[in-house]
Length: 209
Image (cartoon, rainbow, N blue to C red):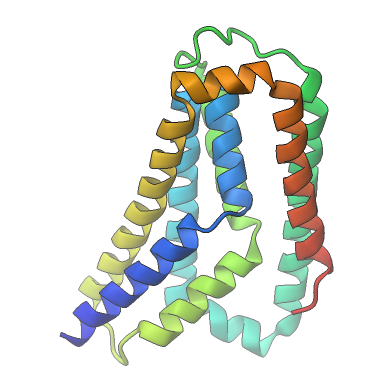
């Protein structure tokens, strides 16, 4: 019963965190609308793998490491923030570039899908606040002596929640109407998305712990 309660608590907290707007949402939305549903789904998979890695790190004691060596958090925070700024600048600079084969959004090349996956994975992992959230949630809900089955269940639940939520985002935003609006206002939307990503990165890199 204790492990079931812990599983439900972790699942609820991670679901709320995944649904909160942030760099991950911006990245998946931008790939789904700009390139197509397939790329959006691969981005969703990247987010799921990133969440799974955070869950594994949390189970291995990430929170304790950061508490013992605060400099680790500072390095992760600055590096992650600068990476988000880099991504934002790339999105902003691509605002004027036309979309190749924009009339066939679901047939993106394998290289494009792999790029979407890697961009999403690195965006997820570049946010140390996500790591802190995972570590804190796990510290709050983990039973004193969790079983191996519990650890495996937690990892699976986290992966399903992260991947599932961003799959919904990618599917919804790659539908014909949202994509049509994007193609019509591509320059403005890309600059807005890039600006949001830059602002999030700067805030992450410059704010205190």
